[in-house]
Figure (cartoon, one colour):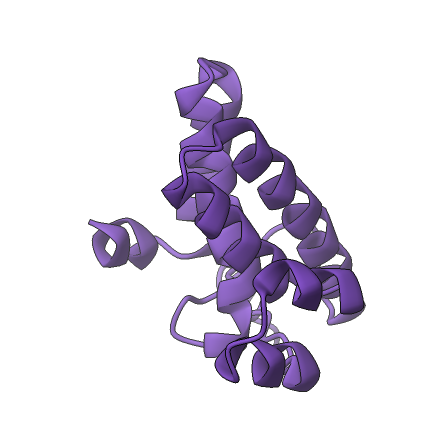
Length: 135
């Protein structure tokens, strides 16, 4: 067996977060879903986006940061080694990726330019198509 060392690591595909997804899809308050399922990046992304829409930039930043770190934990549990593709096309990855997007958006809004730039590079490393999807 010959490994293609130039191909890089395989994509990381997170599992579906059944219970948080059901809660959000049934119209439960996203904050309550995040409280009930604190390891769910999807719940934190939803709370972050809600705060952003309401003009609560710092809260959006904080919620996104929690979801981002919970997502890093999930990625590592699923074989991610700190780099490599995390495709947007795999819907269960979107909770983490939405947190990453929200974190970058809020970092830029509070003039945390270095962090916003690092996050933009991280997003591009995860999946270059995200910039097109979010445009």
